[in-house]
Each structure stands twice: as C-alpha cells, then as structure tokens.
Picture 1 (tube, rainbow, N blue to C red):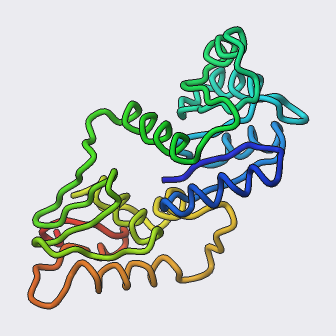
Picture 2: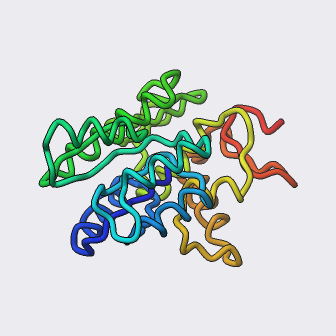
Length: 225
C-alpha cells in the first residue's frame, strides 16, 4: 500500500512517515499543497493523509481539485482545529475522514485501515491462497500452520500479490504500490525481494505458490499457469 502524507511541519511529517513505514506502507511526503496535488495526480495512492493548513495551497483546495478531476483516493484530513465548521468544510471538500491534532499513531493507523476497508469492502482482514494466510490486522503470515517472519516491505509485497491472486502483477505495478517516489527503477531490488519472499513462503517440501510469469510479472497462486 502506498500513502501520500502532506504535512509542512518537518518533525510531524517524519513521525508519521516512520510510523507508517514501520507498518509496511510505502510513503511519499509533500511539504506544501502544490507538491501534494502534483504527487496525487502523478502517482497511484491508496490513501492521502492531508494537513489542512498547508503553504502554497491549503488541504481543502487540494481535495476539491482532486475530486474535480475524478480522483477518488480516500483522503484523511489532519488539523489542529476541532470546530464542527472545519470538519464540515473538510467533508464537503471531498474528505473521507478527519483527525484532530494531537493524535496517536495507533489511531491514525486504525483510521487508515478503516478507509482501506471502506474502499475495498469485498476484502476481509485475512487473505488466503491455498494453505498460505496473511492477516492484515495482526500483520502476520502463516503457511500450513507455520508462522513466517517477514520484513515490513516483504509483508507489503506479499499483501499486494495475494490481493491480486490469481492474476499476475507487473513489476511496474509492484513499484507503484510497494515502493515510494525515490525508488530507483534501474535497480533489481524488486527481484531481490521476490527471491527472499519465495525462500520464505515456498519452503522445501511445499508446493510453490510464488511464480514468475515470463513477460508479465509475478503471481501468488496454486498453479504457475
């Protein structure tokens, strides 16, 4: 999952970024409204965390312009103002939720998960492919009853692959959803992560589930196809 955080206070932006990355999210950060709008129109995000009082262009204006362009990505507004009128303005501008500062990282994460569930109501918190299970809430992976330890990036990669199963996903799609804007497309980091992930979920004696589909990308499914 890839999230855009638009926050002009550097310390706050760093705190949010680190908290989200610790949960396996890929995070891009914008320090003003113009940059936030450009990033939102350039990249595919799963959620936008948008501060209201941004320089250059405020959060309400960014949200309204995105909605005018039919961008339906969920928007969570952040603000230090708790008046009802401000919350109403945010929702009317196209926001989906509103969080008042100061807030706990646990609450921010919970609200993001709620927005993702609302965006994709057909998904449950447990994704299964054959005997492989991924629990989105507990952030754990089990295969054939055996727990598998993954890094946050590996978890995000496996989540993306399993959510698309049985369809394959391209390397480009993986980069857009699992890595941030600073990813160097000339490196083989995706292939390296796929290799490490395969070593962990396709252990000796198990049926291979992570397949390379030549000319297409990668897929998690029972048959290579």
